[in-house]
Image (cartoon, rainbow, N blue to C red; front, side, top):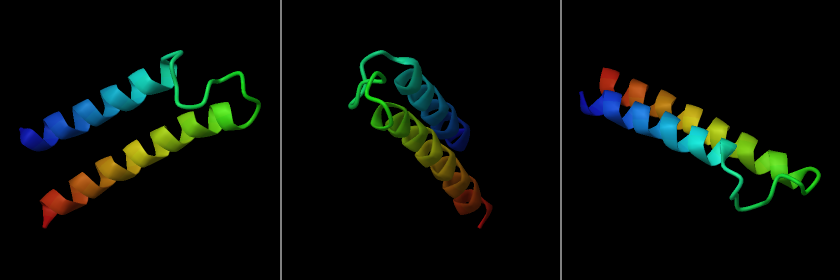
Length: 57
């Protein structure tokens, strides 16, 4: 159950950060604004994969 809650909270936090108008780099900055959102999503996916593999061992 703890594994499920970690995955769910990671997805929720990454999703909220991505759609939130308050970012580290605002979205109106041409490339960097979208790049930080993509980076957050990629890191969240990699973390979920890490958690999944860690618990299989």
